[in-house]
Image (cartoon, rainbow, N blue to C red; front, side, top):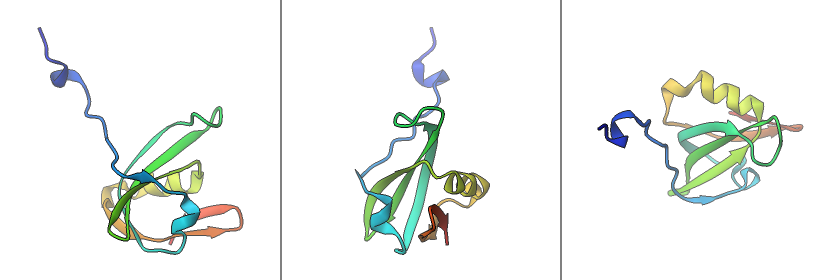
Length: 95
Protein backbone atom coordinates (compact mmCIF):
# COMPACT_ATOMS: atom_id res chain seq x y z
CA UNK A 1 0.00 0.00 0.00
CA UNK A 2 1.28 3.46 -0.90
CA UNK A 3 1.79 6.26 1.58
CA UNK A 4 -0.01 9.55 0.98
CA UNK A 5 3.35 11.35 0.91
CA UNK A 6 4.47 9.20 -2.03
CA UNK A 7 1.84 10.48 -4.44
CA UNK A 8 0.48 13.75 -3.06
CA UNK A 9 1.88 17.03 -4.19
CA UNK A 10 3.17 19.22 -1.41
CA UNK A 11 0.80 21.98 -0.39
CA UNK A 12 2.18 25.43 -0.22
CA UNK A 13 1.39 26.78 3.22
CA UNK A 14 1.57 30.50 3.73
CA UNK A 15 2.47 32.01 7.05
CA UNK A 16 1.34 35.34 8.45
CA UNK A 17 -1.68 37.53 8.82
CA UNK A 18 -3.60 38.80 5.83
CA UNK A 19 -2.84 42.40 4.89
CA UNK A 20 -4.72 44.61 2.45
CA UNK A 21 -2.74 45.45 -0.66
CA UNK A 22 -3.44 49.17 -0.10
CA UNK A 23 -1.41 49.04 3.15
CA UNK A 24 1.80 48.07 1.36
CA UNK A 25 1.57 50.22 -1.79
CA UNK A 26 4.91 51.87 -2.46
CA UNK A 27 6.71 49.90 0.29
CA UNK A 28 9.54 47.56 -0.56
CA UNK A 29 8.41 43.98 -0.04
CA UNK A 30 9.89 40.56 -0.63
CA UNK A 31 7.71 38.19 -2.64
CA UNK A 32 8.49 34.77 -1.17
CA UNK A 33 5.93 32.52 -2.86
CA UNK A 34 2.53 32.60 -4.49
CA UNK A 35 -0.50 30.54 -5.43
CA UNK A 36 -3.17 31.16 -8.08
CA UNK A 37 -6.52 29.49 -7.49
CA UNK A 38 -10.19 30.04 -8.29
CA UNK A 39 -11.64 32.96 -6.34
CA UNK A 40 -14.12 32.21 -3.58
CA UNK A 41 -15.40 35.80 -3.83
CA UNK A 42 -15.86 36.39 -7.57
CA UNK A 43 -17.22 33.66 -9.83
CA UNK A 44 -15.16 32.83 -12.94
CA UNK A 45 -12.18 34.77 -11.55
CA UNK A 46 -8.82 33.67 -10.24
CA UNK A 47 -7.23 34.85 -7.03
CA UNK A 48 -3.53 35.46 -6.47
CA UNK A 49 -2.28 34.76 -2.94
CA UNK A 50 1.23 36.03 -2.26
CA UNK A 51 3.43 35.24 0.72
CA UNK A 52 5.34 38.44 1.33
CA UNK A 53 7.70 39.89 3.87
CA UNK A 54 7.23 43.54 4.80
CA UNK A 55 8.80 45.33 7.78
CA UNK A 56 10.44 42.01 8.79
CA UNK A 57 7.02 40.29 9.09
CA UNK A 58 5.58 37.55 6.91
CA UNK A 59 2.15 38.51 5.60
CA UNK A 60 -0.29 37.29 2.94
CA UNK A 61 -1.90 39.38 0.20
CA UNK A 62 -4.91 38.30 -1.87
CA UNK A 63 -5.80 40.01 -5.15
CA UNK A 64 -7.65 39.34 -8.38
CA UNK A 65 -5.24 41.56 -10.34
CA UNK A 66 -4.67 39.86 -13.68
CA UNK A 67 -1.61 42.05 -14.31
CA UNK A 68 0.08 40.86 -11.10
CA UNK A 69 -0.86 37.26 -11.92
CA UNK A 70 0.66 37.53 -15.39
CA UNK A 71 3.83 39.20 -14.09
CA UNK A 72 4.41 36.75 -11.24
CA UNK A 73 3.91 33.78 -13.59
CA UNK A 74 6.33 35.32 -16.09
CA UNK A 75 9.04 35.93 -13.46
CA UNK A 76 8.40 33.00 -11.08
CA UNK A 77 11.87 31.57 -11.71
CA UNK A 78 13.30 34.65 -9.97
CA UNK A 79 11.48 34.07 -6.66
CA UNK A 80 12.08 35.28 -4.04
CA UNK A 81 12.51 38.88 -5.19
CA UNK A 82 12.21 42.42 -3.86
CA UNK A 83 9.68 44.81 -5.37
CA UNK A 84 7.07 47.43 -4.68
CA UNK A 85 3.46 47.33 -5.79
CA UNK A 86 2.07 50.49 -7.35
CA UNK A 87 -1.48 51.40 -8.30
CA UNK A 88 -2.00 53.07 -11.67
CA UNK A 89 -5.62 54.07 -12.18
CA UNK A 90 -7.47 50.84 -11.25
CA UNK A 91 -4.52 48.50 -11.88
CA UNK A 92 -1.72 47.13 -9.70
CA UNK A 93 1.79 46.55 -11.07
CA UNK A 94 5.15 45.42 -9.72
CA UNK A 95 7.63 48.30 -9.88
